[in-house]
Length: 111
Image 1 (cartoon, helix red, strand yellow):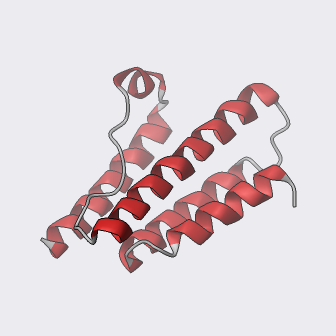
Image 2: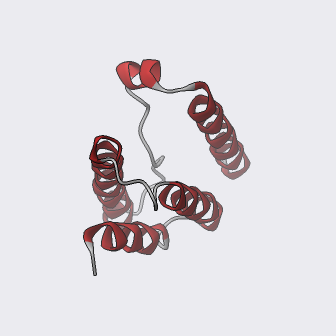
Image 3: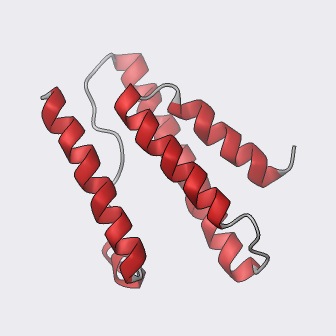
């Protein structure tokens, strides 16, 4: 299996450990992003794309293992770095705002 496909499969597999609401949102977002980059050949675009998704996988693995080991109610995810926020285009920013809104709604329902 090639590395991008393995990364994609690993992320979807890890999403199985998330609450159903988050899994649905996460799976849809991952599938959309990987499809959008499927035909991209520019390594200047692909390298940061895969680096960020590998970092996402690592952080999510750490967070889900903490939850499983400590059996605690922990929020999953990280805030975006301010320098990263400044670099995001308007379309991506809108997508992130919508994603944040959806997850906030789920957290509020579960509180």
